[in-house]
Structure formats: structure tokens, C-alpha cells
Image (cartoon, rainbow, N blue to C red):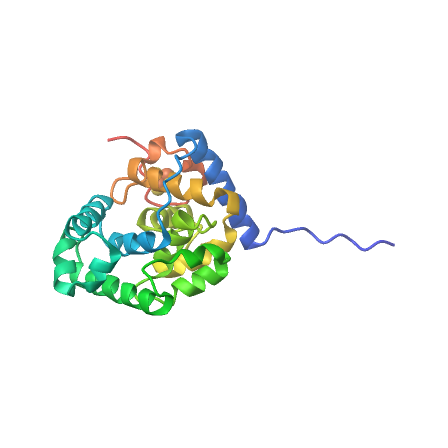
Length: 235
Ligand code: SF4
């Protein structure tokens, strides 16, 4: 007599993976393929992500522009006192902390690599590059994922505030801790959808699923979402 077949139950990871694929397809239907971002050099992207921390894209861009109005190379940034770097990037907020981080980072890269560049990261696999970036102070899990995805073309999945909010509302992430969310979701995001899913969730967060007033009545993933405070009528 043959053994009775055990019921095949998908693991939580597989369920989450399937849910992410479904959300990806819905968002793709709504917003299309996101335009590829132009890739920055790894060191540029690292500093760019430091400037992105705890601020808006607009203010990050103002800080980046301010830095390049004041300086003409990484060498000149590294040679400047923290106060001058801080002044140049002040539009981005937390400028003193960020200026110190940038100066420390540049000093360490120069000391270890002999130049102001981090192109060696391009030759590493994702796990090695992740560990390498983790050695630098001020680079948390989200910042590292941004560098991996945007500069190194690796299938990392940065969880920023928009992505975090939506994944929590949908029920795919429980933790309120952004760093932990960044670590927990990685293995479940299929490589091929990491970039478009990240970009389209951010767009969805900006256009439909805002923090205060989500427009659930016109949300293309409403039936997949477990948020208890859905706003199903436009008012
Ligand atoms: S149903 Fe509402 S809360 Fe859920 S993802 Fe859509 S807009 Fe956000």
C-alpha cells in the first residue's frame, strides 16, 4: 500500500514570495516598467545614500548639488574641514553628522585603497559587497541595499519608508524596524523583480498609499491588502 501523500503546504517564505510576485504584476499593470536609473560610480552612490538619509529626495538633491558647487573632487571634499562640508550640504538636514560620515568614509577609502574610489565593489558578489559596505560607519541595511541595487546592479531590495509602510499594510512585513525589514525581506524577493518592484512600490506609496490618507478605493492591490484602516470611499 502506498503511503498517503502529505498535504503540500507552502512555506511562509514561499507564500511571501508569491505575494510579492503578484503585487509586482499588479503594479506593473498600473505603472509599467520603471525607467532604469543611470548608474553612479560606487563611491558617488555611497555618499549619495548618506545624503539621502532622513530627508526628502528634493533636499538630498540640493545637498548633493551644494557639495559640488563647493568642491570639485573627492580629494577636495576629503581635505576640507567637517564644518565646510557641513555648510555645503546643509540643505539635506543632519548635515553635521553626514559631513563627519562623508569625511571619515573618504579618509578610510583613501587609506585602504590608495584613491577615492570604490570600484573594487563591482568585482564582488552581492554577499561580499554587502559585508564590505557594512564595515563603513553610517551605512545601514537600507543604504547598503541602495548601493547594491543602484550602483552595482545587484538584485538587492531597499526598503525605504514607502516600501516599509506598504509591506506592513499589506501584511508581508511585521517589524516596525526599518533595518530589520531590510534584512528580513531580501530572500523572498525574486532577483528579476527587485528593481521594478522597488521603484513601483515607491511610486504607489507616493501616488496612492500615502502615510496619512491612503486612497484605497483606487488601489490596484486593495484585495491583497490587510490594512485595517482602509479608506474605501473617496472623500
Ligand atoms: S489598500 Fe490602501 S492601505 Fe492597502 S496598499 Fe492599497 S492604498 Fe495602501
